[in-house]
Amino acid sequence: MTDTPPAATGDDQDPYRRIDTTQPHTARIWNYWLGGKDHYEVDRLTGDRIRELHPGIGAYARADRLFLGRAVEHLVTEAGLRQFLDIGTGLPSADNTHEVAQRFAPDARVVYVDNDPLVLAHARALLAGTPEGRTDYLDEDLRNVDSILRHAAKTLDLTEPVALMLLGVVIFIGPDEDPYALVRALLDRLPSGSHLVLSHTVTSPAMPDVDEAVRFWNEHGTPKLTQRTPEEVARFFEGLDLLEPGVVSCSRWRPEETGQLPEEVAMFGGVARKP
Image 1 (cartoon, rainbow, N blue to C red):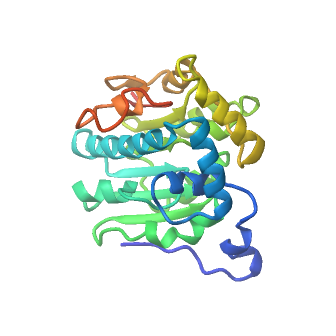
Image 2 (cartoon, one colour):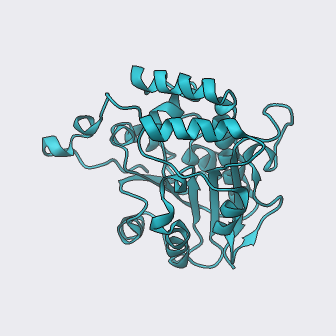
Image 3 (cartoon, rainbow, N blue to C red):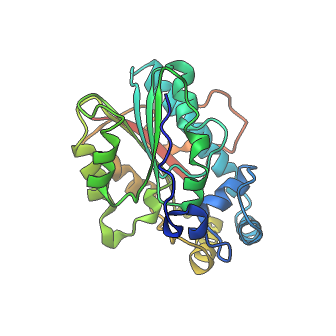
């Protein structure tokens, strides 16, 4: 079963009218690095400049996507989860959350959340799930916890375990907004047995070109992002039962094959269970 977003009733609700093609946007640049087609010249130019500053950027975009697939497969096949709340969805790509989950469990339910108008415009591609399962899309901001959970409850049973997916999205929450409290507010509303899957770009002395690329992005792109150290990323999992191998480079989280990607990329991630 699939749900589709309500039809626009006015110009302000038309997602295409909200798309700014004059300024580079992170979701479109990410799509460009992953080989997608949903981007504009301004995104390609900025993406190429960032790749000049940090040649490994494409590898960590791919590492994050592969991490998503391995984490979702584990949660379905090993942890028995059938519900996913994916916030910061990004543009449709290969092996989206519902595709991986419903490949192993056709009855899996997935709610996608993003506030990017281009993602909303492509939401129907995210909603093409299995007849046994259900997918839905919510045009909402990560910061609006009450609204997200109220709408997600129309598709998900929030009294049963849910996988909270936060891949590459908490980077857009600055320290003045207390990102740890925000993630905790979401988890506090989910039952025992729920899991957190989170990835985050990191700053490290071993990868100075990443810092340079981030500085360039924050000068020219939108939305602005905040880097954190691996230790700061690990703080998001405090109080949870962290699965092996812990919070590591996404390329090292239970890789199916070695050698596909660099061993260390500037995107770290982890999976943890709520006791």
